[in-house]
Amino acid sequence: MTIVRLTRTGRKKKPFYRIVVTDSRKRRDGGWIESIGYYNPLSNPKVVQIDHERLSYWKSVGAKMSERVEKLSKQ
Image 1 (cartoon, rainbow, N blue to C red):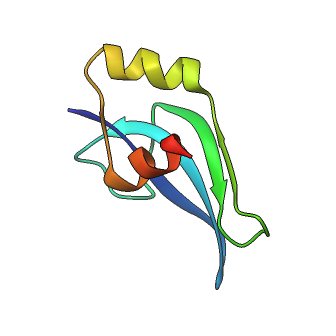
Image 2 (tube, rainbow, N blue to C red; image 1 turned 45 degrees about the horizontal axis):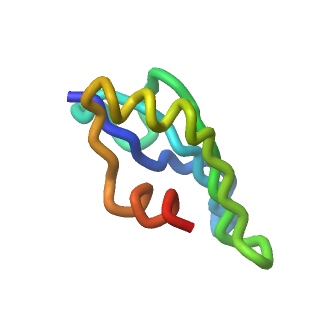
């Protein structure tokens, strides 16, 4: 099953997240199919950048979104 979720990058205590499309059986930071955006929780205001065209494509072919990505995409 394909899922749209966050993968963590950055360094210790300085998280930076990519919004990626991946297989649900992979680990959180494992390989991914496509990166469709990013989320920076430390900047003020928090920065969320999502390619909505690619997100709608992946949803149309059956990819599920994680709870966090769903909340971020509504912002």
